[in-house]
Length: 236
Ligand code: C5P
Image 1 (cartoon, protein in one colour):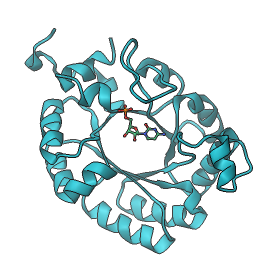
Image 2 (cartoon, helix red, strand yellow; image 1 turned 180 degrees about the vertical axis):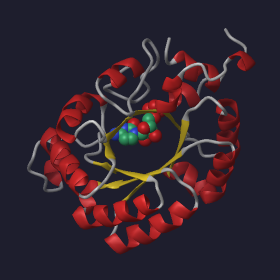
Image 3 (cartoon, rainbow, N blue to C red; image 1 turned 90 degrees about the vertical axis):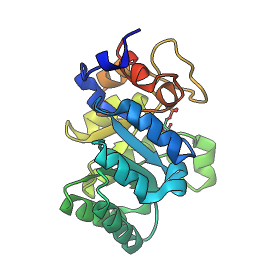
């Protein structure tokens, strides 16, 4: 195993990795961030960590040089989303997301505010935890795949920069939404590693080949003894 100081930025593909800091302690999050510093990767702060640490921790991460994806999956009336995004843009967040089902107006107003700040916003189409039956129960008649495509098209029309998508959807979305549309893909596992509760997993190489722009990786890195080593091991 290589020593930490030998693990310089040797792989530009690290810039396409977003490490999901799904932990409930700011101290643990900072320890992982310190280990990953200067590798080129992004950090993703989700609801759990945001709930305990708010924007202060994001400021720390920015000072450490990380691009930040704040994954709050906003879903509210357009004015509330717009005003929230103004605050988040001031905090220097680089990428944010919202639920496409909030509608065209919400997405268009969000895109305007985020783009004014020179940052990016992506949409969540259908949560991967929702099966066909769950969709029907909330009144969606389309199949999950059709609904993903409908919402991705609407997101593009409204000016969003891309969507969160499983790698299984990447090839089709890439074809439908063009080369510049961001496809941010969770469910990534290096070959032979634990899948945890993810059902349909792909390797980092497979996801990139399918057209994903960024890969969201959580536990394979955050639960490793040496997160930095685990990041570089993604490409073995
Ligand atoms: O630990 P793991 O690599 O499974 O973490 C994946 C991250 O991506 C988590 O933060 C999870 O909430 C997020 N995510 C996901 N599936 C989606 C959307 C987001 O796993 N459809």
